[in-house]
Image 1 (tube, rainbow, N blue to C red):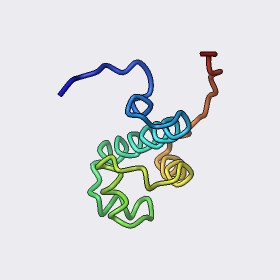
Image 2 (cartoon, rainbow, N blue to C red):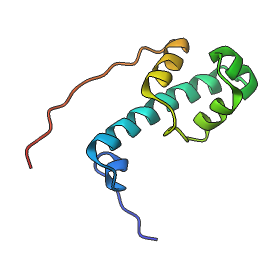
Image 3 (tube, helix red, strand yellow):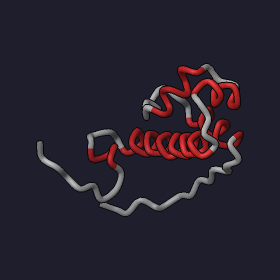
Length: 96
């Protein structure tokens, strides 16, 4: 298997459209923060599910990095419950 170093968004490198790649990257960033919170608090998946008031299988998916089925809003609300304040910044796309 050839290895390739990404210089931007790994999802774009995998062939996703710009829009899909941005949304997937945002979901992953949010999920990583949620997972860090769970680990820092040493919560089991069951206790994390109770804390976030979500079904335990959703916690399992987040920890496994399977975030494509989650809306950004859903993950933002979870991150906020964990004490995080997600921010969005906009970068102007350079002309090709």
